[in-house]
Length: 343
Image 1 (tube, rainbow, N blue to C red):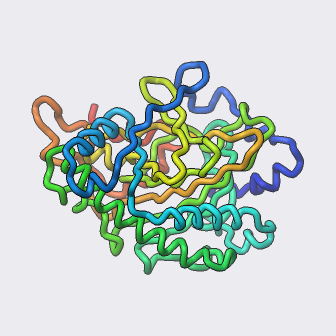
Image 2 (spheres, helix red, strand yellow):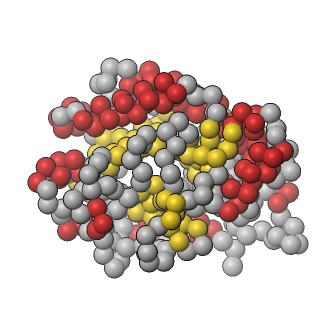
Image 3 (cartoon, rainbow, N blue to C red):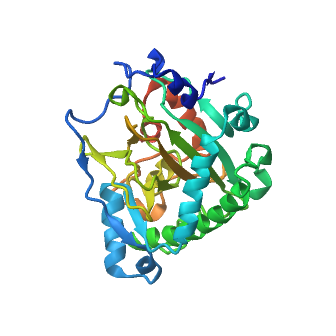
């Protein structure tokens, strides 16, 4: 069972960072020394994807094959809703501990509030989380859904629906960018009655020793797609490219898209699942909300036949329940997708 630890917000009250959070030689080290550069972000106009603009599809393909990360603008999500989601997230984490603990994770349950760091080598993540499954609806564990702020549940429901609509259009555009039938990826993911969607609210308290801790350790997502709502003001997301770290800039009303491991596998390595991390700020708290789109555990995932040929042979194995591979890789510090490669 993963150890349940004191919330980082409570640790911060003492202004002393426990040793377990300080980076060590056992941490997963990536990237060359030196300050990270600002990512030359690919900003994609979502409205042009919807209209099948060849130029925008080409931009999407280049970004996802080189960075594995894009920022969507003009996505149709009301800007007032984005601000409301950010505000309710901050309000939840600002509440007294006894109120938040009503929604604490139980045992090995992934869902709920807390600071539950998985058993792994190296330091602990400097963040608190609230993790909720939103789809399929009949799998929602509402005992973990906060009643305060009072509009939390209805707002998250509305936000989740709109994210799913964006996902469907995005998957079709990604398929078209590879000259596939537009339903090809949508056939694998996008059914809210079967596939799993999780909302992970992350809260990264300021840290007086921010250069010696990490908010979220370097990792690739075990999803098909991750759709991230970043803090409106405080930067923190970084991605690796060519063995260098790059800062992902804050674009207040954009949605940041990260390719997940399962999409890299399905695309036979054409789209890249980027290694990324979250850093913390010495002066300011930071929040983010990650919508995690995960295929049904019963669905086999593997490279699409159309993307396998003599020039590009099959690079990955086929399997069901990638989550098991992901969990098994944590103690070793290895990237789980590397365990799926065909030698």
